[in-house]
Length: 159
Length: 387
Image (tube, rainbow over all chains, first blue to last red; front, side):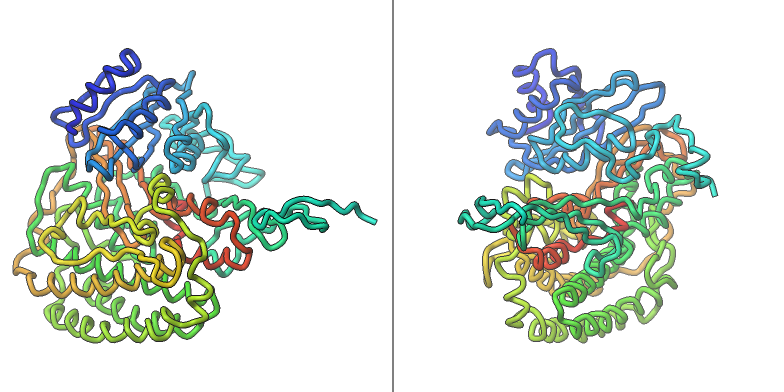
C-alpha cells in the first residue's frame, strides 16, 4: 500500500484525529496524528488486514525548540512490506500522548526513554519511570533548553 | 513457628504445603554473565523466575546529546563506534549509509565493497564473542579461547587496514579513511580458507555437545509472534523462525548483488525459538559471512576511496530513518537536519535495547539457573543498550 492509501484509510476511519500528511518529496512520508488518539490509530494500523503494521521500528522523542515536543513512530509491515511514519506533536506545557505500549510491546521501553530524556508523558503506560538516567535525576537532558546541573547528590557534574 | 501457607506453585499448579513467598534476587550490576553493567532484579518463587526487571543506564554516555553539539557530521562516527564496541564497523556502516541517503550522494563501488567486507568481518568478530562468552557462561571455557584466537586474526586485518583494533573511525560519509593495504585480498582469502574448518571445530566442541544442548535446548523459548511484537531483530528474531534479514529484505549498499542465505531457527534440538536456535543462527551466519566476504573480495574493483567525501556536510533540512543489519539486529538511525552543519537530532534505535526489552517475556517461568543461558543467548552489549 502506498502512503497516500494509508492516509486515506486513516482519514476515513478517524476524521479529525488525523491532522495532515506530508507524503511526497520526503524519504519517509509521514502523517500527523492527534496525540490523544494515538492508541486507537495504532491499533487500527496494526490490525486492519490491508495495513498490518506489525513492527514498530523506532519511537523517538524530538524537541523542535520553542516549547514544541514531538513523538515520531516509524512503522513497518512485514506482511505487506510497506512503511509509514506517524508524528504526534505536543507542547512543553501539555506533554501528553496516548501510550501505544498495549499495541506494540516494544513501545514500553521506547516510551520510557522518551519520558526520561524529553519528559513526554505517555498516558496509559504501565510502568512509566526513568530508564537510562538515575531515578532521582532532575530534568530531561535532551530538551534543547536543558541546563546541566552543577551538582548531583553532592557531586560536581561538569568535571 | 512461622505460618505455613498453601498455594499453587507458579508452574506446576500443584498445591504444596510449603512456605513459598516470593524472593527478590539481584543479578549484577557486576556479574560475569551480564557482559557489562546490567542489573537484573529477579523475582523468584523458589527456583522459578516469576518476573525480571532489568535496570540499566550504568553506561549511559549521552550519545544523542553529544551529537547535537558536533560541528560536523563526520564527528559522530567515533562516537558511533563506541556503541556496540565489539562490532564497531557495523555501527559506522549504518550511520554512513543513513547520511549518504540524506545527502543523496553515491559512493564508488570499491568503497561499498570494502564496507561490506568490513561489516561482515565485524559480524564474524561479534558472533565469535557471542558464542565464546555464551559457552563460558554455561561452563565451557575452552571454546572461548578458540573464539578469541580466531577473532585476533580478523582484528589483525582491521589493524593493517586502519591502524585500530577495536574502535576504527574507518568509514566516513562518502568514503573511507584509508584504502586497504596492497596484500589485502590475499589476507582475506587466507582468512576465509583458515576459518571455514574452524566453524566445524567449534560445532564439534560446543554446538553439538550434549551438556551444551541440555542447557540450551527448550530453554527460553521466544515464539515468533511475541518476537515480532517486541520488534526483536537479528539472530533473536531469526532464531524464532522468522526469515527476516535487512540485507535481503531491505537491501542497502551492495548486498543485493551478493549471494547468501538467511539461516533461521528450526528447532532441531528442541523447540523453535529456544536458546540453542538463537545460538545456532549465529554459527550459520558466520558461514554466510565468509561466503559474502569471498564474493566481495573477488568483485573488488580498483579506484579511489576518498573521491566522494564531501568537503563540507550541510544536508538540506529534512529527516530520514535508515536501518541496517548489524550482528545484533536492526540498527536504525533517525537523523533530523535543520540545514546546518550540526545535527539537529540523531536518535539511535539500538537492537540490543529492543532485544533486551523482550527478556522478561522470555524468562517468566524459567529456572533461575537458566537466566544466565537466556541472557547470554540474546547477546547484548551494554554500550549499545545505554548509549
